[in-house]
Amino acid sequence: MAAIKVKLVSGLAGVPAKQRAVVAGLGLKKHDSTKLLPDNPQTHGMIAKVSYLVSWERVDAPPPLGRKARKAKAGAPA
Image (cartoon, rainbow, N blue to C red; front, side, top):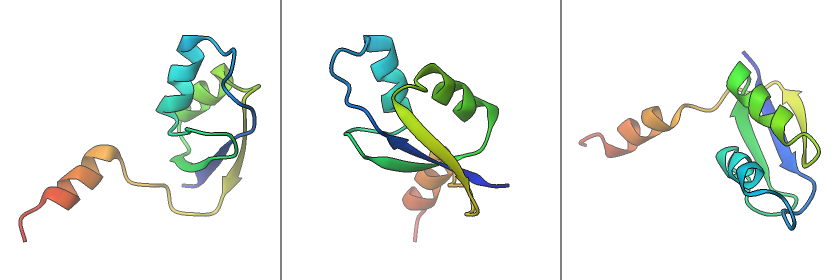
């Protein structure tokens, strides 16, 4: 399975609050910030909602682990 590289190509000034929340959900904060996300329908739906603000491409990299997996791994006893 591939991953998707998403880049915020436009600033968030004048953007509705719901779309700002979608951009934050993608993990993008500032202009030109990039994020590697899993290639799944949820990610594609979020990108579709803010397609005029972001650019994306598929990359041959392993998809990132989910948030729960990272938290469990980081918080595991040594």
